[in-house]
Image (cartoon, rainbow, N blue to C red; front, side, top):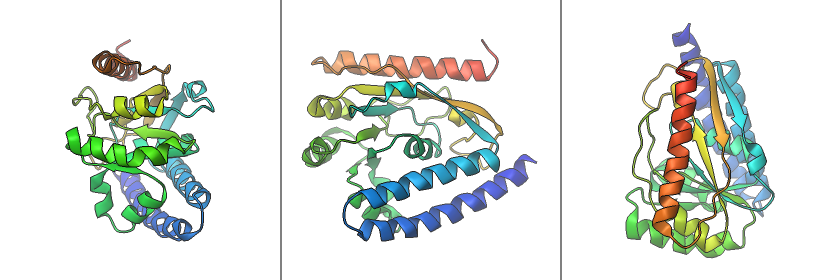
Length: 241
């Protein structure tokens, strides 16, 4: 049964992705960002629907009260290709920092540019910082929340990568609080497995953190907050208390 549901989901996933790729390209041609923003939001909502009713993945969404009308930087754990789909389906309006690997896909680079995304190199460091600087003026005038994945990589449940400091520079320069996000979505939608596991998983927005001036202290706090809560969600999902 899992195999059949996973196959149906895979077919639906790519049909929807291709369909909305074309739709969002057309919307990106229109003046302003609102038509494209609505298209991306609709894509996320459609995929969330398919995740639930085809793959059997139910999202227990928590902590959305931490998303105030004041724009913030959303720093999220990244376990699954489903993570950004849930984000664009939940947070509106939303800007995002994206990895440069995405621009290799047809139409995606054009859509990201029109959406005002900051495209970074996954290598981090000076190159990533320069890209953030280039997009900073645009983001400062933008009243949307900004999504960034501090690790810059997908992590299996229980795994983590080094948190890159671009999230601090982004929040500090924009003078915005950081909303951490923990998740257990990787338990249902593994980043490497074709099989999707029908179950309820959690995506949880945590209490905002103010960047302050001490970069290293902020990065330690952010990493500890996200990793601790993510580990708790995974233990609870596995019945470990």
